[in-house]
Amino acid sequence: MSVTERCLADPAAGWWTYADIAHRAGLSERTARERMKEWERAGFPVPLPHSRRELRWHPPAVLRWFERVEAAARAAPPQLAVIQGGRG
Image (tube, rainbow, N blue to C red; front, side, top):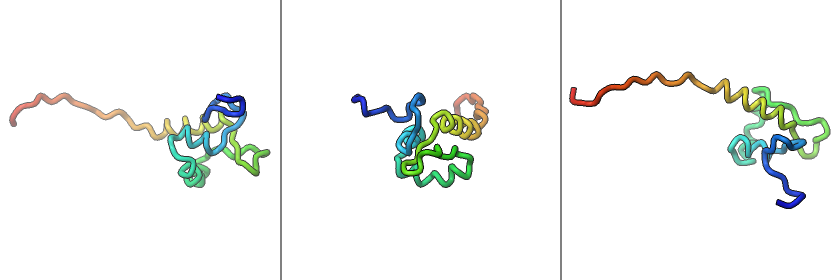
C-alpha cells in the first residue's frame, strides 16, 4: 500500500467517506448513498462540519451507530427441539 492509500473502514482513520461506510455496511457505495436518507432518519451521525465538499464522518460515531442498529436488529434465538425421525 502506498503512502497516499488508506484502508477502507479503518477505525483509526481521522474521517470516513461514503466508500468507508459502504465497506463497513457490506454495500456498494451507490447503495450506501441511496440509503443515507433512511439512515439519517434512524439517527445516523451528521457529517463533520468541515466536510461540505466531500462529506466525511467521524469513524467512532459511525461505528457506534452501526452497533446500535445491529443490536436492535438481533432477534431472540430460535427455540429448537430435537425430534426423532421415523414414520408417524
